[in-house]
Length: 271
Image (tube, rainbow, N blue to C red; front, side, top):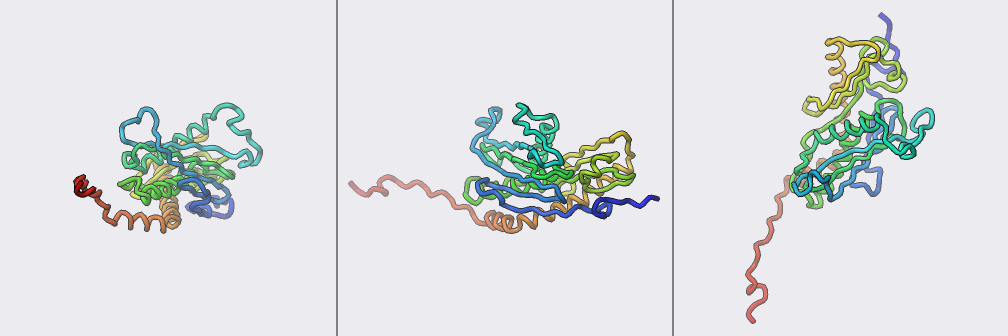
């Protein structure tokens, strides 16, 4: 049996070093900078008091995502998509994936008629940019809706799931967790998995690149992904510890009841 050599000497079930910085942006309602090995993704969460036309006057909010890569996020410069006049098929697919993943985490009816937009910008790419974007986007989204709660703009806490994502694949004949670029380029199987803190899955994207994979291998991929997701969830919680404590306190606090209208004669006294 050939010994598996991974970049950096990682074990098959080992994530790259991961960190999430909360609030790196001054003006966004919520923001996060996630670093996973050499991959770095900046996420800004913006809240606007508008919804798409199909949700107008329905009392429900919406969540959408945009994804882009800086021109020198990769080894060679890539032109900005705005210069081409259209979004590539890859970018469009990633944006939809991020949106679906985060919509699974929120009760959109609790947002009211507001849109939460998650802008995910890849500062540096070394594999796993879409999964890192999802993991960072959950942190930014929580920070943004927490601000609404603290300001009394919403009555119910909209977060219903904790969501994170990671890649797995078949590299050098072995199932491995969290592929970086060198592994991703040569992987026989490439898979992206979005999971929740309850152990359920939001989405599983798996492709054989020139080969097939067995049911046993699929089960191993999902085991590795679940292991990686549990570690990413822990980093999310650590990053948001103070915010989540404040949210718990705000939710325990009894809501102030509106004052009963007083009789006009009582307000102004006798004429």
